[in-house]
Amino acid sequence: MTAPGAEATATDLTIRLTEQPGSKEYVFRLVAEDGHPTAGSNLPDPEAALAVLERFGEDIFFPKPGPPRLCTQQYGGPQVALVTGTFHGRPVNAEFRRTDGCEISRWKAMAPLLGGSPGSFQT
Image (tube, rainbow, N blue to C red; front, side, top):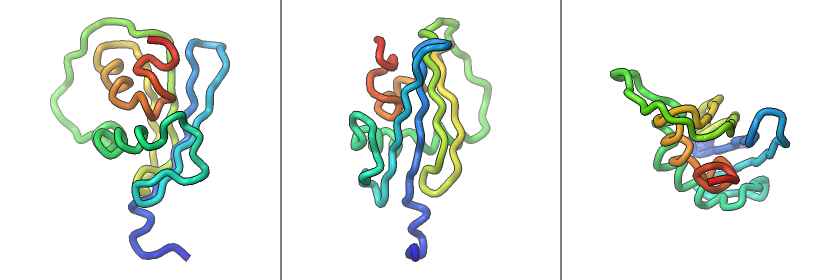
């Protein structure tokens, strides 16, 4: 049985990453309880992934409405990462792409969760 409030600290995320359309899909998982990775995690650096989740996860996964953002029109690459599961017990279904300056910034902020380097496996 789960202790009261334990759901709020649980994280169980699956990350599906492709470097370009039609390429091999990499699948990572991050499972954590009380801020510590558990045995189900297979990210290269689960501690770093948890650190960026604590720093940026709330704002990236559950953004609050605000004024429109102006994003530079630059292309960072064809990589796509889909993140699904739960963060602090809340459902997550997020897509990361490198299609403009704002999306590249999101990707770089969450790089340890997305398998490592700021540009996926390419920089």
